[in-house]
Length: 201
Ligand SMILES: Cc1cc2nc3c(=O)[nH]c(=O)nc-3n(C[C@H](O)[C@H](O)[C@H](O)COP(=O)(O)O)c2cc1C
Image 1: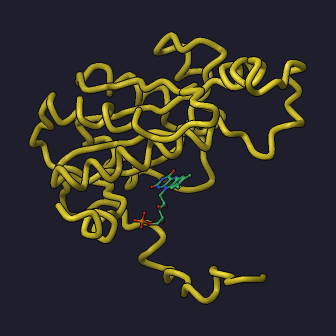
Image 2: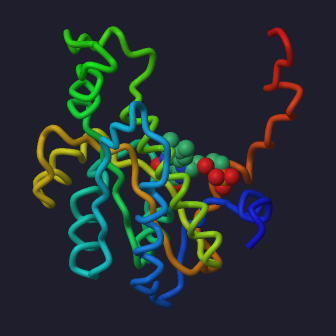
């Protein structure tokens, strides 16, 4: 698929058919994810790939909010149909360690040096590559987060070490009708002139 078509067609998909995603496609998702840029080439990311029904069930049991202000049942009903979930995680320690090396020199590992948490930036970039790879494969995907309140249960369910935190989850599958629509159904894309400042703010 043309790159511009991948960019244009990518939309969050929140319901999937029961058609499986091939193992080759799952491999391509993670191969492409690690082509993302990373600060200092730290690559302080990890990807938890869930394709087995029992693993996905364990994910949703752990990650489904217990009590929420919003009724998420329609969203959940759609998202639970995704045959592939890839949780993107990152390690702050990996970055502090990498930047303490001689070529970077931040040997004090002071977090105040970091303009933004690059560990999440990099896992986000990898996630976008997975979203785009899904489109290129003729599939749909959705990026979403695990709630802070659900993180302990998620960590416990999958044995995720404390040093690793989630940036988000990429759900992938064949798009089906009827998923939750998401914000673009209610909000317009901001015009370029509102967000692009050329030469000066
Ligand atoms: C950091 C981040 C977190 C998001 N979290 C969720 C989420 O929890 N649930 C969801 O359905 N979509 C989530 N989205 C998807 C956005 O709602 C979506 O990208 C936005 O509405 C624009 O729609 P589009 O991606 O289909 O163009 C998230 C996107 C980003 C970048």
